[in-house]
Length: 166
Length: 234
Image 1 (cartoon, one colour):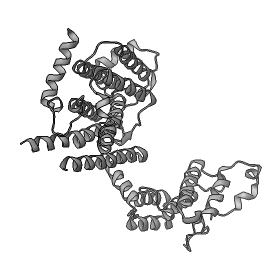
Image 2 (cartoon, rainbow over the protein chains, first blue to last red):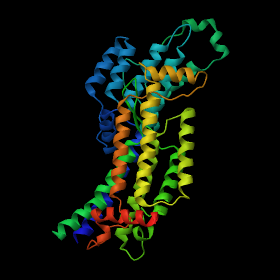
Image 3 (cartoon, chains in turn brown, orange):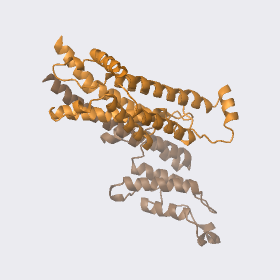
């Protein structure tokens, strides 16, 4: 009886441990902290650090976009919160926006973040009610970022010097 | 007393051994980045799976694992499932043990892979017993460990040394291309290989049966292995 119990315990333990190993290799955590974060995500108890998020928002409103992105990256280390990813994308857009040209690298980063936000949002639709923003949906922001990374004849239009940042 | 012995044997066989082998599976692909000190998990490359198959075949041929006794129709299903999981853990542990001592990329990766393949392939046709196989594996993994984690990693250490200067002169113009990992990677690899050897030592050719026949007891197994070694030499 005892042997059978040990066998069952062994089988369950082996399967659980093997699953943990496969999960670790699939998620590729870079530190013990990331292991903890990924565990929270897997358990469905993951929450962003609201304090850091608010701090990022304050920096964003003072046009300190890079610092804001750092704060938001710390607030959402697993990149699982659509709203935070939307703000990160928005910060990349605003920092990369230029009257004469756009910063391609920042726009690409922004595009990646907004795509993450869309994939994480329920039904792929994300609306952020923030009066300080001029684009409230992830779809709008994505279009703006995509247009910024594309090269066309419109880029030569001198009137673009008068356009406004959203 | 007998009850304790039987229970402990079952614990080692069904819980400790798979845990050790799976831990090798976990640590074998772990590297620590030299600059950022972050974890890098490398899944076993295809060649290590091939090497693990060859090694598994060697285990069976050498009698280190008696497959007919590990998986038998006469045994209860639970026992067969537990044994199958242990054998799978052994397979992945072997693959990851190779992964641990193989350079990650470049010319050296293929050179090491070729030498492993060559050694394991030629060993398929040699007269082996379990004990000799274990000694041979310790030497094989030990040599690869020294080459990779002492010589090759020394070659790419930022501070360098006399060996780096000699190798740089000898290998001038040859792109060896090995990623730089922190020295702690060597310790992780050493620990993984040590665990792998412990796992192999715990692995009985014939699994523990209820009642614990003499063949199955770890202490006697050594004698059995020695016996098989004598028979081969005769």
